[in-house]
Length: 415
Image: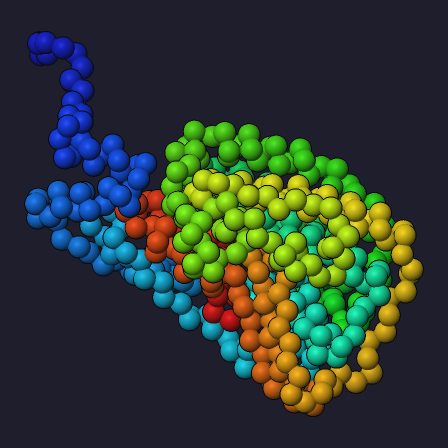
C-alpha cells in the first residue's frame, strides 16, 4: 500500500496574534486586565462584525448559583454586558411569620436564614430581644456566644473557600477537605446543643445549657490543626495556576463602589475597607478580645477568597482567648425571664458580624409575647447587588467565578 507523504512542515504553523497596534489586538490585550475599560472598544469592534446582544437565562435551576437564583445575563458574544439578578423562588415570609411567634420561639426561624452560619443569626435575634428587655447576660454567657459565633464563622468560611475551588474549575478536592473539616465543628455543636445546623441555642439573658466537660479538649484539637489546614488550602488553590488565572484580577470591586453599594464582610474587606462590626460597634465580649480586621487591597475574586482564609486564623485566635477567659469568670449562666414581654412601642436594631457580612435584626414591641414587626438585614442580599458591576465586561465563564467569590446563601437572600 502506497503511503501519501505530506510535503513541507510536519506541524501546522501557529496562528499569528493580532498586531498590538490594531483595534483587535489592543482590545485583546486589555480584555483580561481591564475589562470594563476595554468593553466600549470591544463592543464597537464587534458591532462592526454584526454581533447582536443576546439575553440568556442563567438558572434558577443551575448548580453554579448555589440555590434557586435566576440571573438574566445580557451577552455580546461571550462578553457579559449586564446581569439582572432575579430572586424570590425561596421566599418563605419569615419576617411575617415572626409576628406570630414568641420572642423565644421565633429564634428557630432565623436558624433557617443563613443555615450555614445559624449561630450568628441566633446572636442577632437574642441581642435585639435583650435590648428590648433592657437586660444584659453574665460574662460567661457572652464568652460562650462569641466562642460559638467564631466556630460557626470558621465552618462557614471552610464551605465558602472549599466550594469556590470547584466553582472556578480547579478540583473537587477542596470541597471534600472543607466539608470534612466543617464536620468536626458540627460535631462540637451537636455535643453542645444537640443540633448540627439549626441550633436554637441562645436564650434571652442566658443559654439553653452549659458547655459539656469535653468541649474544651475538642475545640483546642480543632484549633491546633487549623493553621496547617489553611496552608493546605493555599497549596491546593492559592498557588494553583488555573485558580490564579480564574481569580486574580477578575471581578474587581473598587472600595468606593463597595461602600456605595453597602457591601459588608469579606466582599467589602477584600476591597481594602477595614470595617468589621466586632470592632466598629463591639458587642458581647469582643471589646476584650485581641484580633485583627484583615483586608486585601486588590478587590478581586482572589482578594475575597484570601480574606476568608485569613479570617479563619483570626477566628482561631478569638476562640483560644475565649477558652482561657472561661476559666477566669464566674460559672453563673444567668436566668431566662419568666415572661418575655417588652414594653409597647419600644424598638431595637442590632447588628452582628456574620461570616458573610453585617447581620441586622430590627424588632418593634407591642406589649405582648410576640413582636409587632421584625425586619432582617441579610448580608447575602446586599452583597448580591454588587454582582452586575463586578461582572460587566468579563466573559460568561468568569461570571461563575465572580458570583462564587461573593459567597451567598439563598436562604437569607429570599427570607
